[in-house]
Image 1: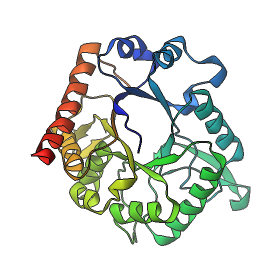
Image 2: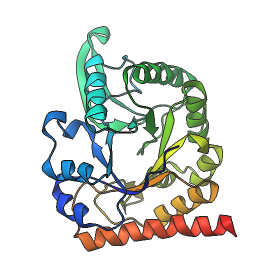
Image 3: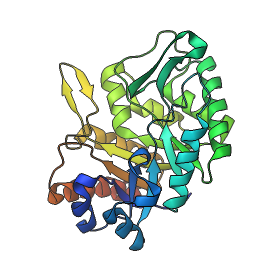
Image 4: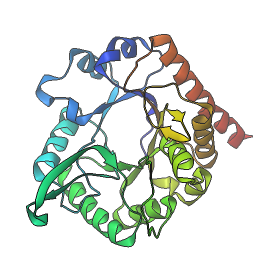
Length: 280
């Protein structure tokens, strides 16, 4: 798997800060927020400096009952080619429902909704993933999602669900350790158990993000500093494998560059300590 190093989610609000941050090896950009023919100057300048840019889709909806939309796949493919990306990432989620086949209006959730972890849902996901893989010019990796609730009648743990998905499709995994922590607080799931069941050889990179707990519910806000429990999950993952890349996400309430640099340093420290322990 290609080594990426330490990265940060590129957002126009912090473009200047990102350009000045030391030790940023790569960035991830929300695919739907860039136009291949009119890249923002700051993003284009990063690419000219040799910084790897990976598009991260949020609206494909591979976990939905419908087959992936050909137009959305073509747009993702266009972005991957324009950015000369080594891979493209999306989510294990559904984002829309309804439409002509259901005799109900088409509805857009505006949110990454969790899939039920059942064999039937996995069958649908695997078929949709294969269709997407055939349409994309670069390898695809999928991210685990955070949730406020669990579906009734689930048949698989998160680790089992992801492991079987990889076995059946060969898709890569983008593991969000903040999402594992979210599901620990909100659904009572043990993140270490999920990590124990993961096919770590499929890991392409890791997301780290901040959130906040209110009234016993963890909100995966991407608008707060990364907390020690999330870094603890990252440490658990790094104890099992050396991730090819680790990326900091921030989507709102953006801090100054010094605070971003501090969070990146904390992430690097976790990764480097795990490497030191493994080498001892």
